[in-house]
Image 1 (cartoon, rainbow, N blue to C red):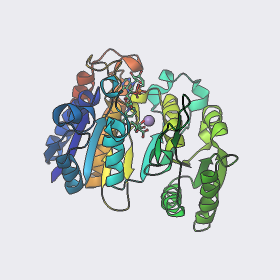
Image 2: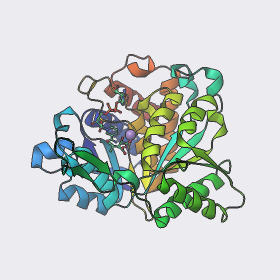
Image 3: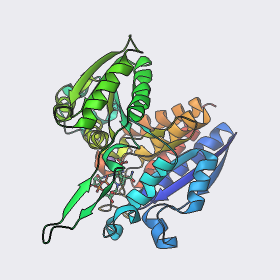
Length: 359
Ligand code: NAD
Ligand code: IPM
Ligand code: MN
């Protein structure tokens, strides 16, 4: 088939992990007899530099037309002086998620056997860990009114409004319960309902939605305690449902159960068929341009795109098997204790697909 997707490398290590993922996609397409039709476009800081805007209209048009987007990362110190929607993060990534109505971001935490030793946690805590975080992606404090109030002389204040509607909570809750139904039938909803009104509404709505899923167990947890439980008893969780900012923070923490930020992919989905696939890590300016970045999160995101947007299950599984083989053999980058460059990790995984998969 013709695999037509929008490729947004972005900033920092984005283009590096992106190139490695394209190597793997090319090898996979060749092995299975598909063609790739890649529409590469600018977003974030790279778009600001090239055309003075965070999300050029042809980027958005391509994303909407293909409905399948593979994104690296945006942002970096060069653009950190910018404010509000002039920033790569707000005007680029958040605007794209919002315009495409990708309200559900799914982030898995299932440590690969070959990576248990790379985690700072003791191995006995990690055996059998397998949960997904379903993070609300287009609401909450990220998208509320924000600004500065300078009415008080010499004492300005700043504000970020956090707002959630019942509808926004309902649709993300349904996603979490549906997903739990295909897994171990447990949803842990995370909020801060002892303090926040949005969290109290969150808890009410999640409890109501749960009634539609009598076979799924629901528990509520406060986010501060959840940050601890995730380290002390990560095995107990199946689907973790939470709002935008809590999900952002908890998933960086969850990545440490899996050995590195550089191995966690994500899928951002909406009500329709459009899907954006993005590693959870950022542009990593501290290692950008040095060939040190781990491309596995991006490669697994590409596999997820094949599975979800193109229904290419065998192709996606082939890539995942190749990743497991690379991890098992220590053909990995420095963050996982290996010595391979970003592009060599990608080339090895691509070769494994070409040499070991019988289409
Ligand atoms: P980061 O995720 O970029 O990096 C955090 C740490 O993890 C760094 O030490 C980095 O070197 C390491 N790391 C991240 N990805 C890695 C990989 N693939 N391989 C090896 N090591 C990796 O977070 P940060 O430093 O807080 O943010 C840097 C910039 O990225 C900021 O501008 C931020 O806004 C942006 N950001 C973008 C996204 C995105 O586009 N999805 C996500 C997070 C952060
Ligand atoms: C992520 C990132 C983004 C977020 C930033 C870059 C806006 O941290 O995808 O996890 O907070 O959603
Ligand atoms: Mn994040």
